[in-house]
Amino acid sequence: MNFPKSRVVQAGFVALALLAAPLSQANARPAPESFADLAARVLPGVVNIASTQISKERAQNGPEMPNFPPGSPLEKMFRDFMERNGQRGPGRNLETRKSQSLGSGFIIDAAGIVVTNNHVIDGADEITVILQDGTTLKATLVGRDEAVDVAVLKVTPEKPLTAVAFGDSDKERVGEWVMAIGNPLGLGGTVTAGIVSARGRDIRAGRYDDFIQTDAAINRGNSGGPLFNMDGEVIGINTAIASPSGGSIGLGFSIPSNQAKNVVEQLRNYGKTRRGWLGVNIQQVTPDIAESVGLKEPVGAMVARADEKGPAFGKINGGDIVLKFNGTDIKELRTLPRVVADTPIGKEVPVVVWRDGHEVTVTVKVGELPEDLTKLASTGAGPSRTTELNLLGLKLSPVTKDTIDRFQLPTDQKGAVITDVTSGSIADEKGIKAGDVITEVQQEEVKTPAEVADRVEKLRKAGRKSVLMLVQTQQGPKFIALSLAAPKGQPG
Image: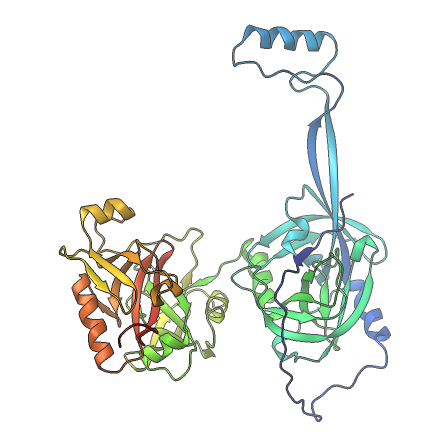
């Protein structure tokens, strides 16, 4: 049997800091005298999960078949010899090997619907659910979602099971008591308790990271188990730990129930997750970008491009900064993909964007996220003249046959090609590289190096502290704000 299965985020992990906020005494829940009554009530709704992988391997009962050239007469002669002597041949002497991993889950429907992590059952040929009383039930997979790491299973019990209910994870505050139940190290139903240590953790597990952090002990095998609030509601699915050793050090992470509920519903209804989609490429709003477009603070998600095949095309433009989506404030970049994904497909929603120095509200009909997203290439052209922008540390060239061949650009590329970046310059610090192409300056299209230089100089003379450029990189289009303050040793 394999070691009980769980996702471990190995430390090398940056230390996390948590700012304390005063709690209202009127609303604070007192520390429980005991967790016993709560544990007794919800334990029957928590299950152990055994997933089995079956593989066939050749038994080590004789010499290996040499590697002969295909069609070699020696190959047939050697095979005939081995088979006559009862040794290994094609399709003979295969051993069936089983490897088993253990995890946790919980029942959400008395008819036999079980929720767990996808990584608990990933690749399994057989899945067994073990109830608290020791009853074992064969399970079938209803659906799974790799992006959020959730899976839904179905068992057929002889009588109705004890189910637990999802709660509202958004109501759980930092410092609230929580209780975890699972199958650590294959020991079976184990109860641990702690508090909500932090909210909204991004542990780089995926684009939809929004984990609840808890100090309730979570170990290998706890994956897929529930995190309960003091009302006995599931407010998280225990999924990962940060640990240098693989054991609990008080850094556990749970998928919030409000995120999991939508995924579970989709899996039950469709067997897969159908996510909302805007069809925009977005990037972080830095302080430099915020200053360059007149925002008071660096908030929102900046749109680098709207896919012409996406639902937002014609409504949201490249250069817009999404500040609010369907009533939800977009304070940071990673908030937008989550709220869009959870929005019902086909729903028309208001989107507040920052455009041309003020807020604009547009209405967008949310589409369905395609399984394969196609990146669209930028287009453009320009006359032939090289320009140096010493202030920024850039050398620019027009799009020519030479630059297209040299940097493997699209034949219809437009803009100003960056042919050289001065080491240690402002552009170098921002990650700009030779072969990148400037297509916009201050959200206006540019077609030649001269146009880039002219607009940069006008901004500098106007006293602007930075210039906003749309740069086509190898990873796609990206807005980059470059400081116009003269570096030491350079004239202003």
